[in-house]
Length: 430
Image 1 (cartoon, rainbow, N blue to C red):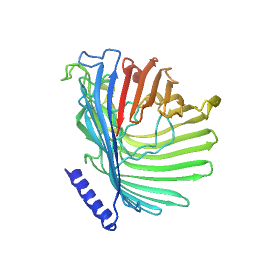
Image 2: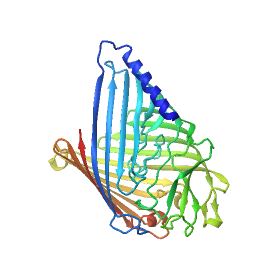
Image 3: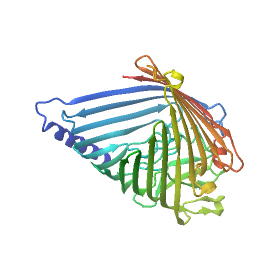
Image 4: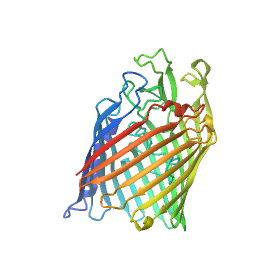
């Protein structure tokens, strides 16, 4: 209710700000959207008979922009919604953006719901911390939820400085506990969420970012202080005691206080791009519980964990390859976490290799193939993404993800060993 009142007041105020100085001038109005039919297929049977192999869904987006003639004032709204026939957690809607923006020369301010992206690397975005991941949309972490914020930025001769106030937290959602896929061998109870701050979703989070260009180098420095976007999953009900028919262990999300300093650098050397992201973070994590098989639980004490992480590599593009009019890009990146095998994610010591083919044709045909290799366990995974426009209003998308090899002792790879998937989407733009 508080957020609804906030947005109502926001757009009422924005309407007055836009209309007041523009009595005799019409607003510039942009409106467009799309509707998508999606089919997903998991070739392997799930861990339980109730887990589906075939999913059909309908999704859509709508964007509306109101711009004053001098472009100083703007109201921008971008909505998203999806209905999934089996996974009710994936049936959801979101305001990706709903903001009033004011620009006056080098100064810019925005208030409302917005999306902000930081970073330069392809496989893993370490410094990108503002928005919560829309976890039910895709496992690659690229889709983000809208974040309520107030933003101020100033662009001067020495770079751009931005400040963000983030007064409301968005939790990360997980797939349906009965039918949802992919499933990593446990389920997450979205109805019970824990915050170290004890203040729930109302937060005092803030962030700062400086970015500038120094010749061949684009450099960004960032600082975040607030609630961790990625939760620590705590064991709630052990296997065999689950209230659900699939018997999987139930986990609950614990969002700790989190601080992160970040650096991102990209150097452009002709057809070469050199990329680096590095972070130093600090958070309080729940200790493992010996009585729960070494998994952390809510009743355990916390320990402060300081972590250094980095990811970086190269990208090279062959433009107009063999005079064909097509471009081919090659990407190689290394991902490092000083905790290595003890990291609570699968990117402790990994290499990512990617191949991007762009046809540069009227249909905007493009193919992206990527692979990840764990240097500690030799586990590997492969992904493919392809898209092509059909006529003037349609686009077809194909995605495939495979866990190619599961190395010894790799719990993350083993968890998704039977969760290979295909996704087909047909999008109509209007």
